[in-house]
Image 1 (cartoon, rainbow, N blue to C red):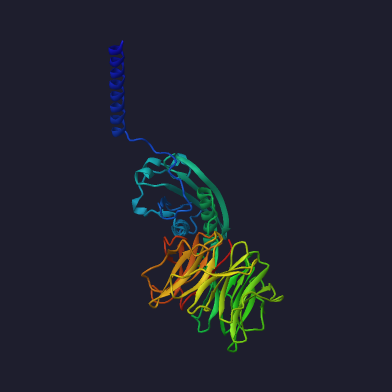
Image 2 (image 1 turned 90 degrees about the horizontal axis):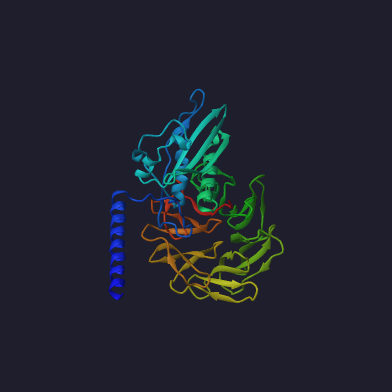
Amino acid sequence: MKNLYSILISEILSRSCKILLFLLIIFMIFPPITFGRIDFNIDKPGDRRFKVAIPDFKNLSTNSESPELSEGLPKVMANDLDLSGYFLPMEKKAFLDGDGPGITADNINFRNWTLVGTDLLIKGAYTCIGNNVEVDIRAYDPFEGKQIFGKRYLEKIIDYRLLMHRAGNDIFLKITGHKGIFLSKFLFDNKGTGNKEIYICDFDGYNLKKITNEKAIAQFPRWTPDGSGFAFTLNRDGHFIPHYMDISTGKIKRLSEKEGFSARWQPDGGGIDIALRDKGFTAIYSADINGGNIKKLTDSRSDDISPCRSPDGKKLAFVSDRSGPPQIYVKDLTTGSEERITYDFKYCTSPVWSSLNKIAFVVAEKGVHDIYTMNPDGRGLRRLTEGDGNNEEPCWSPDGRYIVFTSNRSGAYHLYIMNANGFNQRRVTFFDGEERNPSWSPF
């Protein structure tokens, strides 16, 4: 019986080995097909950028009007997805011919797209109707050979970039489960015309517009949480005074009679924190949205500046020179306790608190400025910029996944964006003068 058992086990193992060998040969000759390759980890940008192919859009207009949109429309979307840090637009020279005249699945040779490594395929067609353009956009998973997104958009031809930002946001949301940044805007100051004024542009650096005309020094803009206006500092007579501008009406009003800097809105939009000069020192005050009901928040007989609240509004990060060179402190507004949280560097400035509870700030060492992030307790230190000029004035996107900042790595100061981990640093403004003190709009 024992010998029979041994023979049986030996036979089973022998047959198993033969089956495994057979399967191995089959897989070597016919590699397994991979399905569902679009699998994102939104919290780890840069781990792998997904290759996206966006061929020229089909022009279905009756008389082939606006032929430039065939390349212009997909170019906007490719740039948006590239700037997001999660996608890598493919060069058109890598595309293989073989698709039909339409943009539906039955017109697509998916094998040609998988052969060149495409993770996401976006097809589009447009029709010009008078001054408007209707665009049909569809996204496909080429490995599964199925459509995962489809939508039609209508916009004025002159606003085709806006249309594509909307479409890019929709695709980004569909694939990642998170809102895109493509419709957001930046405020900043610039003195390219001779006077420092406040400007606005789209997140990709297009549609520049000057929105103050004070012929003085207007700087340090900060959006309200609802995007209806912004606080800024205005100097007409040698004194820096906090002001507010309503974007829809263009009306400007003073927020304080005292000289002040660094006005930043509280997260719920119900008030504002301002660094005001009083009795030889600068302290941080809170006020309502009209500059009234002022309350002093710091009182150290030193200069306390750059206030920034935690997402829940219960803590305040700020810069103080009370211990010597500027360092970053956090005050618990409930208990009144204050704690210094930077010790690794001699000079720290410009703290900004993200909606994901991270603090970005600037470190000055040996005459060079770079951007770091840390947890609110000072731990988890991470350097984001290094070796590329001075990098300053960080500002978080509303979702806490991106940072806009200024850098002179190209000579003058311009705006750059990067993911929260420092990945994908890209210049987005190319205007005359220098762009400083950016503020990222609510989505």
